[in-house]
Image 1 (spheres, one colour):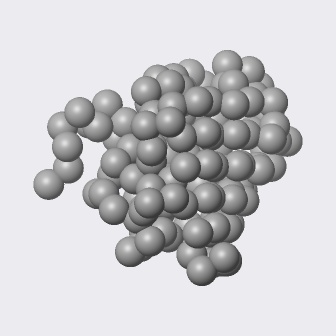
Image 2 (cartoon, one colour; image 1 turned 180 degrees about the vertical axis):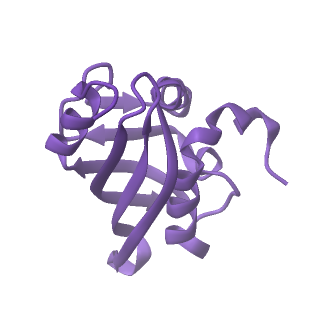
Length: 145
């Protein structure tokens, strides 16, 4: 059974479920926020208004994702490719997400590549790359497009 504290993050569930499934038995915990360390570093190598380049710690990451789910609802996440390296201590995942920008109703589709460092069966560091143009186009599009 899912932790009720995570109910507010339901609009990002497809992403969280994809990540959890990709990491399988390399990590312990049911939900995405259960499988990260308290002092995790979540680094994004792109600029999106309102999203910091580096997020330090589980609490700040949860706060950032609250902003995400207030603006975007994902319907699915797919096309997962998993590359395990360094005896499973580093995992690279490629995937796509599909959703809607809530303020405009514009469809949001994006591709990502994430490099994940695992320590003591938890995510200690996350480095993210995405199709910045796809995000920009979705976030700046007008309703009805």
